[in-house]
Image 1: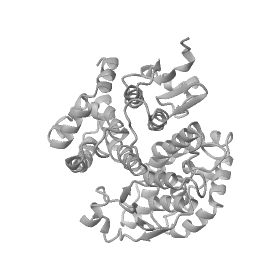
Image 2 (image 1 turned 90 degrees about the vertical axis):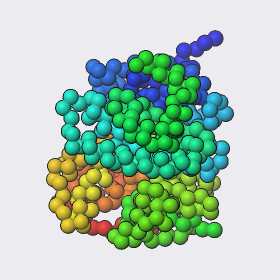
Image 3 (image 1 turned 135 degrees about the vertical axis):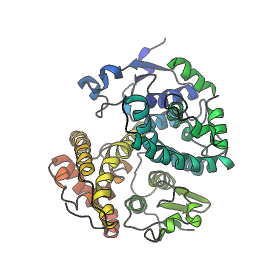
Length: 215
Length: 219
C-alpha cells in the first residue's frame, strides 16, 4: 500500500536555487519525493511555523519519517550516501575519490557560491543594483572560472572522470549565470567550462527538473 | 608515510585541520608556507591548490585542499580511532553532523571571518578597519549565536550529545574572536559560553591553540 508518510517531503519552491540542488539529487538517484510549497514571495519562510523547521528562515528543509534536515548540501550528501547503490553514483567509489568530490563541493560553497549568490541577488532581484559591486564580483567569478577551465581541461568533470555531487551542486547557480543574470559569455568564452556545462545540462535529471520548474 | 599539512599553525583554516588530526590521534608533519612572502602564490604551491590558499594536505598520492574537505577525509580514513567526529555508524546522526557543519560554513563563518579580517588582517596591512562592516557582521553573528543558544539548550554539542566536526570547525576563528573586544557575544549567551569553554578544555585544543598567535586589535 502506498503510504504518503514514506515519501520524503521537501519544503521549498521548485524555482529556488537551494531546493533545486536537493531536487536534482533526488532525480539523479530516482528517489520519490513530494514538494510542499513554501511561498518565498510572501515570506512564508520567515514565519514562526517554518522557523521551527529551519531556524535561519531559508529553504529547503526536508522531513523523512522522523528525520528532519536543512542545508541543501547536507541533505544532498545524506541522500547520495543513503542511496549509494541506486541511480547515479554521486559520491565516488573510494575514500580518495570521495575526498576529491568533497573538495570540489567545498570549492562551490567557498569560491563559486560566494560570488554567484550576490551577483544573482543584485542583477536579477535588485532593481537599482550597485554597479561597482557587480563589476568587482564579475572579476572574482572570472578568476574562479579560470581555475575551473584549467581543471576541466584534463578532467571530464570537476572531480575527475565521473559526474558527481561536485558538478551537481553548481547547477542551480550555473543556470542563473546562463539565463537571468545574463553572464553566459563568461561560460561560452571558456572552451572546457562550456563543454562541461553543455554536457551536465543535457542530463535527463536536469531536463526533468527544468520541466518541473517550467521557466 | 606521514601525512603532510602545508601551512602555519596561526592560520585558522590550518588550525581546523590540526585539531582534527589531534582528535584522531594521527601523526603528521607541518610544512610551513611563508604567507607574508607570498609562497602560497608560487607555481609550485598552485600546482597543489590552484586557489593559492592554505591548508593543503598530502597523503601518499592524494593532494587535497579546502579545510573542511580535509577534515572529512581524515575523519573517515581514521574513523576507527580517536574521537568519533562524524557519527559515521548512524546515517541520520551523520547527516545532522553535516547539517551543523554546513551552518558553520554558510552562516557562522562568513560573519565571524569578516570581523576577524577587519580587526586582525587589515591592521597588519597598515590599513584602517571598516567599522561599518565590523558592525554589520557582529549583528549577523549575534543572530547566528541566538540560534546556537537555543540549540545548545537542547543538546550538549551542536549536532547532538557528542563533540563532532560540526563543533570543531568553529574553534579557530572563535578563539581569535574571543581576543577581540566583542567576546560578550559569546559570554552573554550562557549555553554558547558553556559550549565554548568545553571546546577549549579538550586536549587537542590545548595542543593547537598555542599556534594561534596573530593578535587582533581590541576595538
